[in-house]
Length: 505
Image (cartoon, rainbow, N blue to C red; front, side):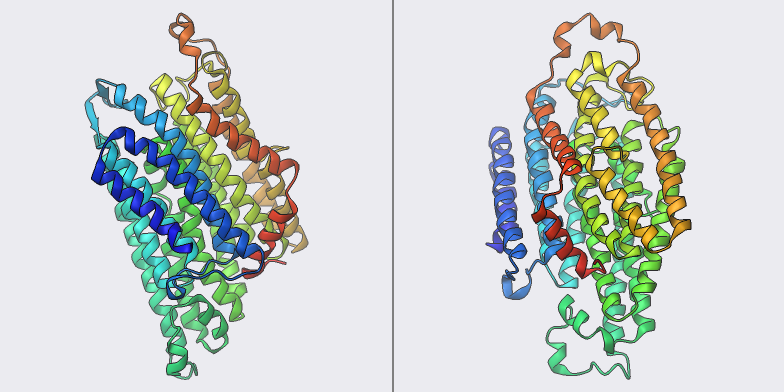
């Protein structure tokens, strides 16, 4: 069954390329998503019961941490695939496409290539989240870059091409640094005097379990160097400041459903690469070193996001900087340890759902207003009532307002800071969140409120919103609201299982 998590989207992608019919691709996309959700749920349920599912000779053996990110990626893909059916149908109906920035005409990439790359992207994320092998994890993260680059360049105009190359170059540099981290990790265990030269032990080299079990034999300086490279390498892909430069461009130029997957699922995969290194350092008694670095980059990301969100007029870039903020919160919570780790994992769930919701809605707004500027979008509550209401709810959720799930997770992380006596960190954390809340609220309220656009009010039919554009965001909004009101015991148990692997209670 585990193999099917990779094979299902791979086969679906190949079929889409081979058949090429638009109707076939659009029908197969949500079916693939539904099938993958079923497989992911079964896998996560097995892990939650304490079982150890494995396949391909141990190449796939998910734990609670990987299982959490696996089910998130799967659910977001399913929501995005439903949205994609209507989105691609409307894109096909457009006769002349012109770039919003310069007015030049452009074309779209072939639809079968787009849908196939979506499936390949899901297969790559499935490998990342289910493998305990650091080499295979590195290959999987590189595969996510290669499969998602064509998705960013779906609209073939100059700005999307620039964003795609920026994404490829920066992430490739990052992934190269992460490879050096993997090499240094091996050096740490084979350095003279480490006591780990046994050929028997070497049989399982590259496996996370092996590294954790023998972490006490490793050379601390090499371990620290390896973690720095892993943090910088995967942190580039995760969007931690100051390594986040690709993120605002890629998120703003990609189709909104792709931005939703990049922000909600891909960043978690990169985070997982860092967490695997953190696991090894914790086992080696060097958790203070890796945790300290995570706290430092978390604070830096929070402050960077606060600076760029204030006055940001491009609403998709606003969401991108919000992703930088939340990656910082995740890093901060995990670095602090204790109860903050469970809060960070809950935060990853709530952030993924909320950011997918907001990016899908940004696609609705872009399709109606044909502008990226929040200054030119007015009266959403009149022109797009459902999108306007969900956009407001999404803003409140992502800004950490009660009663949404992010409020609960941020509160748990704050509790962890106070319990740890990190008063200065708590003060910076609260100040940054307050600035970000004000910065986002100005833009969002301006878009939702404002005067009714005269040209749109003259066309009552333009107020109708298709179901495919509001049902997936609505489902996500209900989920985020539900997690704010009640965190199910089984979910909290699963978060604790994952948290214990990385220094949680």
